[in-house]
Amino acid sequence: MLKQPIPTKIYLSEDEMPKAWYNLRADMDPLPPLLNPETRKPCTKEELEAIFCKGCVEQELNETDRYIAIPDEVREFYKMYRPSPLVRAYWLEKALGTPAEIYYKHEGNNTSGSHKLNSAVAQAYYAKQEGIKSLTTETGAGQWGTALSMASAFYGLDLTVYMVKVSAEQKPFRREVMRTYGANVIPSPSETTEVGRKILEKHPGTGGSLGCAISEAVEKATSTENCRYGLGSVLNHVLLHQSVIGLESKVALEKYGVKPDIIIGCAGGGSNLGGLIAPFMGEKLRGEADYRFIAVEPETCPSLTRGKYVYDFGDTGKITPLMKMYTLGHDYIPALTHAGGLRYHGMNTVISALYDKGYMEATSVSQTKVFEAATLFAKTEGILPAPESSHAIRVAIDEALKCKESGEKKVILFGLTGTGYFDLFAYKRFNDGEMVDYAPSDEEIENALAKL
Ligand SMILES: *Cc1c(COP(=O)(O)O)cnc(C)c1O
View 1 (cartoon, helix red, strand yellow):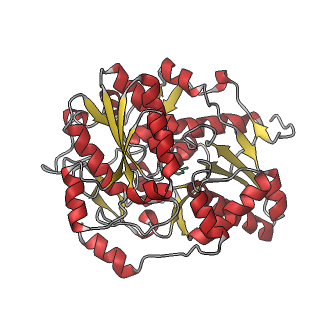
View 2 (tube, helix red, strand yellow; view 1 turned 60 degrees about the vertical axis):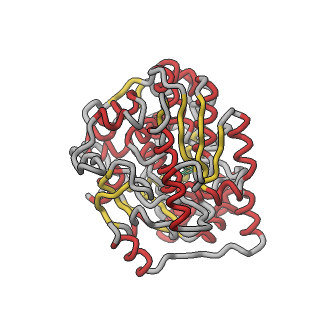
C-alpha cells in the first residue's frame, strides 16, 4: 500500500468530493417505523409531508437505496466550504506523548461554525424545488439556526427560528448572524404559539430546551400556508446528508493508507456521529472491516448511557411523530450545560439501534473535563473548538493516553464538529474557575422516564 509521509492536513480536490450520500440503513435490518402520535400507526408519507419537504420525506422513508445522488446545485453550494480538511493532530499527539495517531475531520470552516450546513443546504434546496415559500426551525446553541439562515437566504426562502431562550440570552451575537441572513429569531418558549404558551404556564421562567423549541417550530409550520419545518439533527434524512463527513474522511485516509481503529463523535441528536461513522459502520455491518465506535454525550443529558430504548416523542409538546430511540423522556429538561447542541432528550433511531445491538459504545463526560480537553486542543492545534466537539476531543485524548500506557499505536479519528467563537461565555466561566459539573440523580431520570 502507498505509504508516504502524511501531511498535517489532507485536502481532497472538488472532484473527490462525494457525488452521492451513503444511506447506512440499506445495510441494516429495517428500523422500527415512525408512529403517528394520535393513531400510533406508522406515519404515512402524506402525514410527514404536512411537516417536512417531500424530498426530505422520501429520503426519511428510504431504507433500501444504498447511495442517493447529491443534486448538482447542492454540490455546488458544498464547494463553497467543502471538501473539509482532515487534520493529523501532530501537536496534540506530541503534548500527550502518545504513540497513537490522532486525526480529526474539521467541519467548522464555514460561517455557521459547524457541520450543520451540510444538511441545511439540502433541506432548503428541496423546499425551493417544491415551491415552498417559508421554513421554520428551532435552534439550541445557534449553529443549526445559522446554517438554515444561510441556506434559506441563498435559496430565497423566509425563515423563522425558535431559539432556546437561555442560548438566545447567552449568545446574543448568534442572533445577529441569523438576522443578517434575514431570519426572524424568536426566543423559545414564546407567547407566539399555543404550545409555547402551555409550556410557559407549566414551567414559568424556564430557559427552554430543544424539545420545547421543536414543538413551537412544528406548530408554526403546520399552521402557516406553504411553510415547512426543517430539523437539524435526529432524523434519518439529516444523518444521510451528514454522510459526506464520513465519506470524505474515508477517501482522505485511504489516500495515505491509514485505517482508523477507533472512531469518536459527540452525540446530541446523533447526526454528525452518524454521518462520520456511516461508511465505516457499513463495512462493519457487511463484515468487511472492524472498527470501535464511541458516542460521547454530556453527563447532564445521557440519553444513550442512562436512557431507555422505547418509543417517545421528539419534542416536549408531544406533537412530533413517535420514534423508537434512546431517550430520557420528552419531559426531561436537561440542566444548563454549555454544550447547548447536545441538550436533547432523545437520539437518532439509527444510532439507537446500532447501540442497542452492540455495534457501538457510548460514554458520558463532565463539562469541566471537556473544557480541560478543549483548552489543551486550542493550545496545541490552534483551533478554538466548540464545547460540543470538545466532548469528542476529551475521549480521543483519553483513548490516546490509554495507548501511552499500553504502548499501542492505535489510529484515532474524531469529528471536530465546530468552532467555539460564540461560546466565549462558557470559556469565561471555565477560565474564571466558575464552571460546575452536574449529573442528574437516578431519581430525576426515573421520574422523567416514568412519564413515558
Ligand atoms: C449541533 C451540534 C452538535 C450535535 O448535534 P448532532 O446532531 O448530535 O451532531 C455537535 N457539534 C456542534 C458544533 C453542533 O453545532
